[in-house]
Length: 420
Image (cartoon, rainbow, N blue to C red; front, side):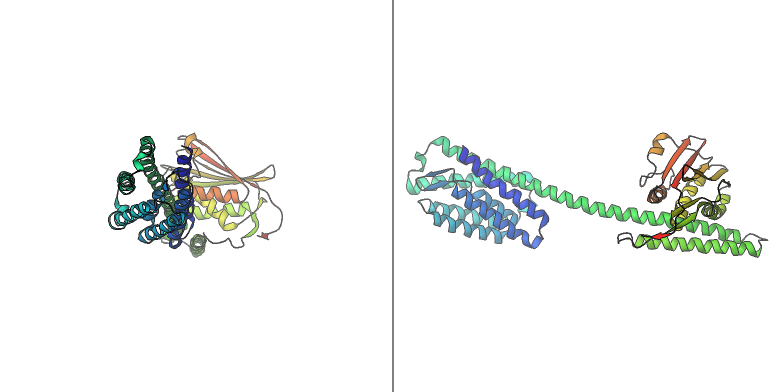
């Protein structure tokens, strides 16, 4: 029994070794690795047989031979056949001729019957077919040996039957195990492929979302330019703001095009939060008017500075304010507040919209979670990411049907601009 278990180990261990190489080695080398590990299994099974009965070796050598042939193809099958015969003749003994007959019969069946269609069979067919093949070969081998030498059936019947059953069951187990490992590897590759497609889809949706904001604002300014009686000063102001928003759209596209590349140096500068909030209010004013929303601002501090990137801060505030405006139904108010507290600059956006539940608040910033019918959730995600990059945080307070307050807290900074 101990020798049988050792032989089973010699059969299963190369399968594990092959699986490691199957995942990590280029496909053109896989058959070489497969032929090598199963040759090793054949040789070591014959070196440590279950029993040596008057020169006839009882071992599980045919299992790695069949596995290598079925999963490596005809060239591997012929290579393993040659290795098997060479080493069996090297070991010598009366069983050489039986081994030659058995292996040749197996090779013919494998080359002309099984290998061409093996990969089209179901798992059940693969297991039952290989078990039947090994069981049949074992029985034919015993009958042939008895016919030629007339003594093999003198061995204990329980030993002979145990050997046939063990070889058959181990063959089925090996096929199942190998198919399972290959299936797991295939699933991992498919999952990796799906993740890449998902990332591409998310990036496409994110680009669409982020570019839509400046385009929407620009559209609002262009509509205002068509208003009768507008003076030249306002026209120039609207045109300047439209150009700035188009530049922002171009910058967003450039950022996403270089998304997968190493980050270039990003210039951080001292930003006067009051000035930046004023800019965002001016940008969002036309869109708010289109939605029947009034924007108010309370700037308690005119000297509130943070270290950050101007374009990204604009993007963050525009994303949040656009969401706030769209949450307001049948007219309402959006209020901006800027204050300082405990060496932090606070930017508050308060709307009179539909509000959110605690469950909705908990999921804010998660990609593709949104409270809007046609939203993607990416605008809020980007806003949260920008604030986090500036070492700040966002807190959200909301009540259903009453409104929502986003409080952005960023460390105050009075240093000089830097690049990193």
